Length: 90
Image 1: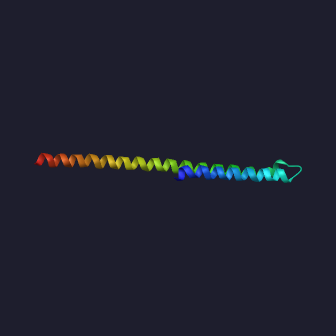
Image 2 (image 1 turned 60 degrees about the vertical axis):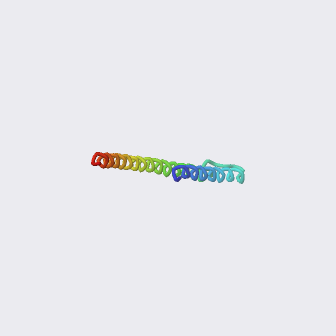
Image 3 (image 1 turned 120 degrees about the vertical axis):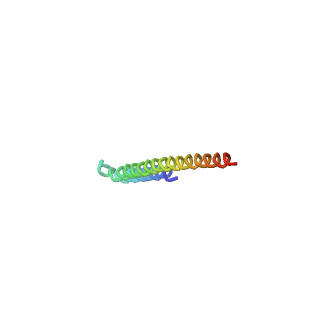
């Protein structure tokens, strides 16, 4: 589901961002924090985005499941009442 996949996609972005940062370190003889900032920024943004999407999807899913459960409960209660009514009329 989206709530499970989104954090994984965010984590993939984190790994890619860190790879970019380490590639810069490997290519340069002297590395400044600014040189690494782009890769680290990518890593943090993708992690945050993945978590936000995952959390929203998880909360939405649970909200909808709760709504469906309430409707099912009401349908079962009305069906039982209807069957009782039919049984008493026999």
